[in-house]
Length: 518
Image (cartoon, rainbow, N blue to C red):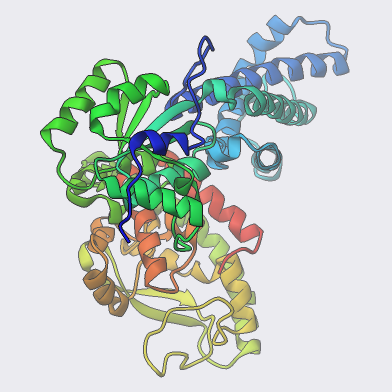
């Protein structure tokens, strides 16, 4: 029986794609613009909280000074407090747009930030030794004893003000009038993947109206999947609800009809001259054109190595910060400073951990293993032992969830990441960094380099005790996990910075405190 493929008009008629809303006012914000807007609002709220806290503090003390004179006297304290709050807030993931539209998730992070800021303040200024009088008089709290009420007021007011601003953002600015309408050029695997990311992880930043593809079979396949729902479990539900609206010939007309502001280029092969000309026409109309790998990377924090195709140079970290002259030196200096500060904690914890390990199971305190580091150099990593002795008599194996080889004490050490503390020695030696891709075993590396493209790029930087992949995906238990971890690791290599390292460390500490380690 011969199958008749639907025409473009029939495809559009069967879709639920949004029609053009004539006469409506639309302010289509980009992802970067949304984050800048959130940051600007947060800064305004912190300034408001600081001024209000000063006023309430003066009122509680019976001080008749005006807010202006108080602000003039205490502006260094306010500036430092706001800067530290902003650092904690950013590290908590405040500018993840998926979370910004969820009030409950935002509230949890707001009050976690307030708690961390308050704890840090009192730890620095009341538990540790007092700073020199000159520093206290010029920077912190001039002419008075260390503040107690003012920081508490600031933390409480900042939490309320920032949460109020984020509620306004979620209810108003995350609405459709501020959404960019996107058309995906290419209805294949890469196109479906970016459609899923835009639907599930793009917050309200983008609204996908459909696909453009020159292959008439793509129209038929997507329509059949939608009608019969026979797609494979890994296929994208969102993409099955979207039609192929036409070919490149109708690209300019579709941009006008659906008020499209963004074209997502999800084509992994070379672009022919006719499609290129159509894209240039749209670009001349002010339409944004984004390669699928770069948009996917911005939305998910991963580099889609399986979707880059012939455009591999677009997504991979060929010129990353680690190739510069200053960043590796700065990162090494930070590693040494953090490791030196953490060594006393290792000294305090080693005795009780040693007793617990020895009472729980016979065997040595430490466990060492070969791992692959920067440039493929093999080194020996050190950890507190968390498994029974001779756990790998049958050869190297992935660690699984609820692995029976893990001891009772070992399970606690893994959940809190305390088993990684001896790696401070590897960091001081230069084998590892505080933050970076987790080092893998040579046996697994040899296998994964044969099976996963670009896997060896993980070795472009020093491996780390904490990592971007670790806080998002955890430890690898299979080849599929290793591919996902590679996507996160390549993102980190490409975007490594002081702020990204701070975010990773902050989330690692939260994972330790919540016992959510593997």
